[in-house]
Image (cartoon, rainbow over all chains, first blue to last red; front, side, top):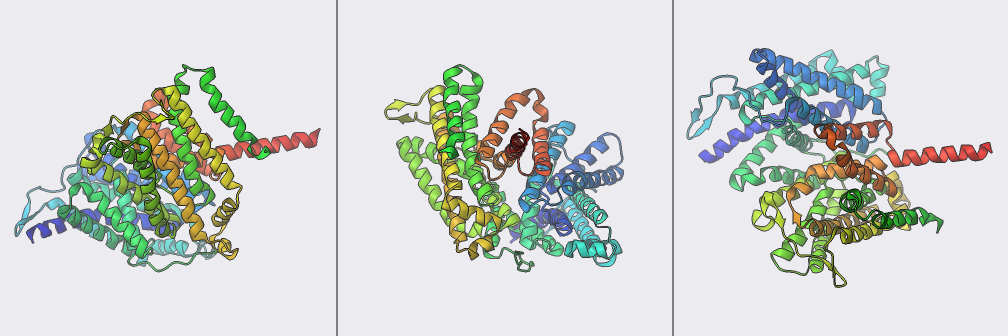
Length: 290
Length: 317
C-alpha cells in the first residue's frame, strides 16, 4: 500500500510533465493540424537555456523567465520558417518536417551546450516530506502545482480571452475565421509560441528532479504525443488527463514489472488504445474527408 | 524491355564497380553499408511511397532479422540459412498479425503506432539481456556460405549484398507496374475511391506491409552475418527516422528515388566527417529543406526537370 502511494506520487509528478507537453501538442494540432514532433525539444531548450543563463550569473527567476521567452521565440521561428512555407503539405510531409526540425534543434543544442548532463537546483528546500511511509519531495509538489496553475491559465486563455477564442476559431475553420476578420497567420504564430512556452515550463519544472541533456527531449516529446493521443488528439483537457494517466500507468507498471521496461509499457498502452479506440479517451470519432 | 533498361544499366554499374576499383574503400567497405541501406529504403518505399502508409518503426523488422540470425545460430547452433528462414517466418507472422489493426489507422495515429512498435522492439533488444546480450549485443556469428563457398571477405559480401539489393529493386520496380502496384497507388490516392473500384484495400495494405517487413528482415539477417555483430544501437528509433529520410530525400513512390536517397545518406557521414559535430544539424536541415521546397524529392524533381529540358530541345529542333 505504501509502495503504491509512492508510485502514485512519482506517477503524478511525471504525469504532470507529460500533461504539459501533451497540452502543447494539442494546441499546435488544433491551430494548424500539425503534430509537432519538435515538442520535446522545447522542453529541452527551456531547461538548457535556464541552466546556462544561471551559469552566466542571472538569478533563478530571471533565468527561468528568459528561458521561457527564448523557447517561445524558437517556437515562433519554427512556425515562420518551417510550417508556414509548407502550407499545402500532406500529413506525412508535416510529420517529416517537424521530425527534421526536432533533429535540427537537437543538433544545434549539441553544438551550443555539448553532451554533458546538467541539473537545476530545486525551487525551494529539498527536505522530503513524509506521508505515512511514503515520501514526497517539495519539488514534486512544485511540479504538480506548476502544472495545475499553467493548465488553468491555458484553459482561461482559450475560454475567456478574445485571442484564445480566435485561435479556437482558426482550428474549427481557417477560412471562416479569416472571413470574420481574424488574422489567421498571427494566431498560428501565437499558438506555436504558447506551445513552446508550455514546453519550456515543463522543462523548468522537471529538471530539478531528472536532469537534462541535449537529447533528453526526444522521449519526453514522444510521451507527450502518447498522452495527447490517449486523451484524444486535439482535446486540450483530454491531453492533460492523458498525460497524468500515462505517468501513473507507466510508473506503477515499471514499479511492479521492471523499471527497464518503463518506456515500453507506455508505448504498449498506446498501441492498445490505438487498436481498441483510436480516438482516445475523450476524443470523438472522426470521419475521413473524401 | 525498355521499362527495365534503367535497371539494367544500374545493375551493370553496381556489379562492375568492384572489378574496376577492387581496393577502393568507398566501393568495398562503404558500398556494403550502402547496399543494406538501399534495400531497406526500397522496402520502406513500398509501404510509404506506393501505399502511402507512413512507418516510423521500420528498423524494428531489420533488427528482428539480425537478432534472429544472431540468437539462433549462436545460442541454438542452427544453420545460418535455417536461422534466416526462422527469422523471416517470425516476422511474417508478427507483421501479418499486426498489419490489420495498425493499417486501419491513418496519419498521425499510424505514425504513433509504428513508432511505438519500433521503440518497444528496441527496448526489448536492450532489456532482454539473457537472450539478446543487452546493450552490448552479440558478436561472433558463424560464417555464411553460399553453394559451399564461405562468404568471408568484403568483396564476396559486396556481391551477395549487391545481388540482394538488385533483387529488391527489381521486385519493387515490377510491383509498381503490376496489378497489385496499381491497386496500391489507388489506395495511396484515395482509400475510399479505391474501395469503390472494388479493391480490397485492407488486404492490399496488409500484404505490402508484410512484404516490406520481410525484405527488411532478410536484409537484417545478412547485415548481422556481414558485421559479425549485432547491438541494439543499429536498430533504434533514430535509424527508422533515417530510413524515412532516405525515402523522402529521393522521392516518395520512386524506387530509384529510394536508391538515390539511401546512397546520399549513407555516403554523407563519410563526406561530412570533417564537420562531425554538425552532422546532426545538417541531417535535420536536409529533412526540412527537402520536404518544404522539394516535396517530391530529389530524384523525382531532377527527373522531371530533365524531361522538361529534353522536350524543350526536341520542340526547338
